[in-house]
Amino acid sequence: MLKAEKQIRETICAHNLIEDGDHIVIGLSGGPDSVCLFHVLLKMAEEMNLIIYPVHINHQFRPGAAEADQAYVEELSRQHGLEARVFTVDCNALAEELGMTSEEAGRKARYDAFLQVAEEISDSVKIAVAHNANDQAETVLFRILRGTGMDGIAGMAYEREERRNPAGTGGSTFRIIRPLLDTWREDVEEYCTEMKLDPVIDHTNNEELYARNKIRLDLIPYIEKKYNSNFQEGLVRMAKIASADKDFFWAETAQAYEQLKVRPTADVTDSTEDAFAVTIDWRGLAECHEALRHRVILKAFRDIGLEKDITAERLEAADKIILGRVGGKKVEFAHGHALRVGKGVVEIS
Image 1 (cartoon, one colour):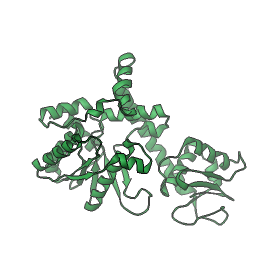
Image 2 (cartoon, helix red, strand yellow; image 1 turned 45 degrees about the vertical axis):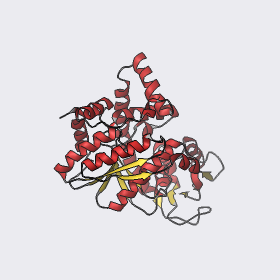
Image 3 (tube, rainbow, N blue to C red; image 1 turned 180 degrees about the horizontal axis):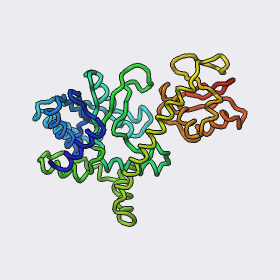
């Protein structure tokens, strides 16, 4: 058994990512990582009664090459008796429409497609994506350069939940799994070569078009040459340590959150007693350690649909009114969300 397959199987077993009879939606770009994962999962399908659903997204970024990638994925799927679901999305137009980068638009297109297929299947579905260990190292370094906390240093998780409805209400929630997260790129490439899989190569990955590409092509090789030849391994090891700490703190947060939640009261200014508000005991929240208090606030916002764009500056502003250091009673957060302090309570809505 080749090293990549052995490692993928060990990761799946260690983190219980796949169970007998699972339906697996796999993002199949046609590149080495996704093709390697697809091939290994097909072997496991025979052993574990898995049903595999390949999904391909044509982002329309590379006219001609994108269509060739799509044709490769469709033919590869047919060779194994499967039909690839193909979604064609003009991601440049989507980026302009939504005011985001083309990278962000591409990610949105992919996960929208994965979740749509998963919801159509509905029964015991998991969504497999092919991020490898090198991707993990690059992600951690990218976040450090932008400025991040412990959760950011933890990098990508082996599994997480993704909501079909981004607002957090209605729709279904599915598990995203990353069976390749402990497998290095060189081992993936060796697997593809030995198995004669002939994956497609996206040559834009070797161009310094995006920050992530610059980190992979320029910064990491420089650090490995000048400072530490095992730099990527160190980043991945740090991510695993931070991930364990992250899991512990979020378990503590869940317990504190349930203890601190109270029913909405009329004492809160501009109260909205609906599914988009959480009311928390003010004194208990104020007495929490800063790290725990911030996580309780984050969890409350997540429960009402705000999972991103919560900055350290906004949390510090919330601290000031919760602890009475300023006279204000309200802090605005992203996308129309806010934190308000009333008599004995804090409302997050």
